[in-house]
Image 1 (cartoon, rainbow, N blue to C red):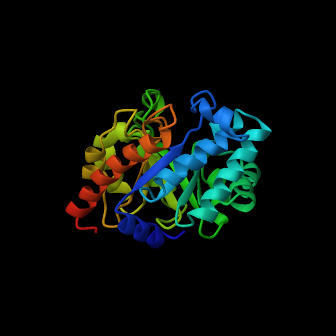
Image 2: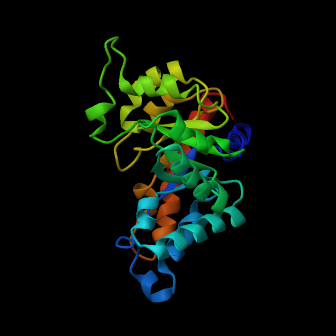
Length: 277
C-alpha cells in the first residue's frame, strides 16, 4: 500500500484508527469455547467484522500469537488472510519489534513480507542500518521503527542526552531518516509522550507515525492530533484493549464497535477541523 492510498482510505473512512489485535486466550469471552472449534479466530473475526468500516489498519501483536506455539502462528496467518481477502483496503501491521544482524533481519523480512501478507512490521533500530535495510527491499512494504515509546522504561535510554544535549530518540530519528523515505518508513511514537511530537515533527515532518497508548494507557487523542497531524494526516492511532475487550459476554463485538465508533467520531471531527476531509 502506498502512502497516498493510505491517506485516501483515511479520508474515505474519516478515520485514522488502527485496531490492535492483542488477542489473549485468557481474556476472550468464555462462550466462544463452547460455540466454536476455533474460538480465538472466532473472536478475531468478530472484532474485525465489527470494526472494519471504522478503522484503516489492524495490528496483530505477535507475542499473543507466539505464546500459543504453532497453533498461534496458524491463527495469525488465518487472521491476516481473512483481513486481506475480506477487507483488502486495510493496512496490516505485524507488531513484531524485530531487528538483528543483516542476514537474520532478511529472514524476518521474508517471514512477514514474503511468506505472510503484512503491509508493515515494527522494527527495533538499536543495531543500526544494516539490521533495518533488509526490510526496506520489499516494494510497497513499510518499516515502522521504534523511536519514542509510551512505557515507563522509555526513560531508561530514550531520553539520554549526548554531549550536544540531543536526546537518543532524536538521534534515532535523524539517523534513520536517511535509510528510507516517507513512502516506506514510519515511526512508533507513544501517545503518552504527545508533548514531544513537536520535536518529532521537526525531524520527520512527512512520515506517518504509529501512535500506541491512546485509550487504556491514558494517551490523549486530541493532544496527539494537535502536535502530530500533518497535511496527509500522518497518524495511525492504535487502540487495542479498550476496543477488543470492551465487553466479555456475548455482546463483545457490539461493544467493540461502539468503542471504535466513539474514537472514529472524534477522529472525523479532528480531520474536518484540519480541513483534511
